[in-house]
Length: 85
Image (cartoon, rainbow, N blue to C red):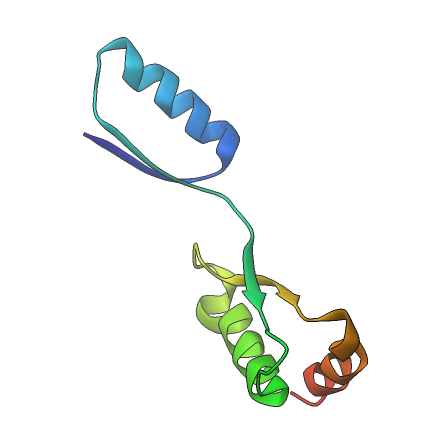
């Protein structure tokens, strides 16, 4: 069994190498961890939590928040809440 966490490009290489000998391969590949905020959310609380999750583990975790997605109608409010965090 081969387990790999990292980039998509390296994951492809690991998969290709593992397939030669029919090894079981588990890949956790690089993605973008979006923090979704819905219309009825506590925006200040959500922005505070997003800031925390983006900075925990010095940004070295594999599921660190990389983007904050908010409803367009609440964008200005989200910018203010994020700046206040």
